[in-house]
Length: 423
Image (tube, rainbow, N blue to C red):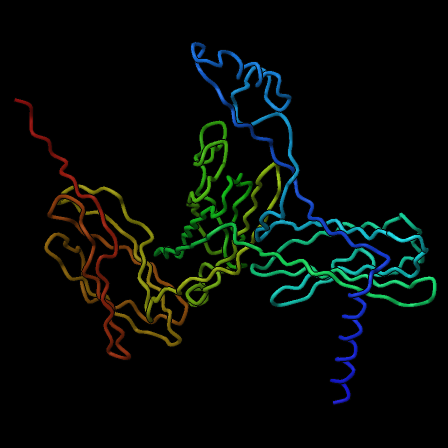
């Protein structure tokens, strides 16, 4: 109860001080870049009643571009007339000025600026030391900067404390509330390939009302992966972006970025480790808006659904793209033990309607320890033209009497090597 009474007394003291007229005045202004001045050109035909009056007026207007008076954009810059929008990833800058409006010398002036967000309170003041004195008509200026990292309501709290000539200590605060908006909408999709590669598609949409220049969109991979950007086309001399030389993103436009992640060599052979990796990395996005105002946004760690290989994984190391009809061709299969126990495997090859295996079915592959791999060359042929799926492989673990079936492993294009003679 005693603590509650002290807090209530302090609140009353602050209210009483707010009612009295202070010797110092506090001004807070947001610092933003100016914008290009816009005109509203009015024209008419020569035979109309005004004649060339509008043309002469626009030529005499100092804000228009000489020789191109009918353009909406002018040569002058205009200062912002309102607070404007603040977006996540941008730098919030503000000018704070404390002016002595009285005819007295004020002592021990302390100016403090805090930014209150939904989760934390940040001190933005450049200096926390008090100014010894402030003469009449003099001021204390400060510029604060903060990279906005949260969306939602922000409150800038500016507090000023000082001592009068009579030794009375006074204190007042001002609150400035503003909203931080979301500039980009980022959506991601993952595609897990059979070769342990992971493809990431990032869809980035500009949800502001002004165009953006996309300076950089990169993927910072996790420690187990190397990344390759697939957003450029390589030519003999240089690589050109698929989005063109001027990388602008108009309002509500969406752009898709593609990346390929491959396991590092030291992790590539560890099937169990790669299988359980869900953290892929994070996107780093840098853009510029009006007159070069810079913004930066980093996503949280992107996570994928780990692929389910089961106890035994079968992948293809070598397969041709095109084969001839009814002619044998070779493939190389890689069998990996993804379980934590040793397996004794038997390989069976079952023919399908279009694919026929060559060789002995039911052969023993031997024992395969955990995380170990085995490469097996196989031969087969196709009796049907077109795009054919390779199916019919069966692996049986003799220890547990469990059979693993593998169908639609890959596809090959079967063509006829014979051409009918011209009549």
